[in-house]
Amino acid sequence: MTQIVLSIPNGEVPFLSTLAQKMGWKYQTRDNLVEKFIASCPKTTDISDEEIQAEVNAVRYGK
Image (tube, rainbow, N blue to C red):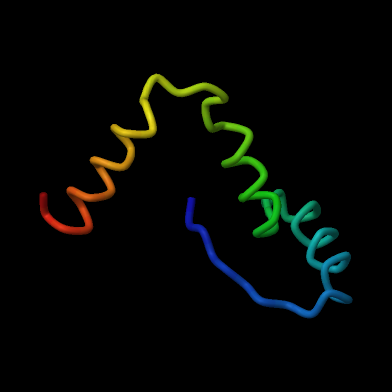
C-alpha cells in the first residue's frame, strides 16, 4: 500500500471521508497519528533521568 499526504481545506474533509469509504481506502488525520503514537508509548520507563541526560549529551556533544 502507498501512503500519500494531502493538505485539503477543512470543508472538504467530509467529501474525502466519503470518497475513502466508497473506494475502500483508509485515511488518518495528523492529529489521529499523533494520538495513536502517544497511546502506543510505554507509560513507565526503566531508565533514570541521569541515563537520559547521558544519552542526550552523547548525541549532542559526542561524549
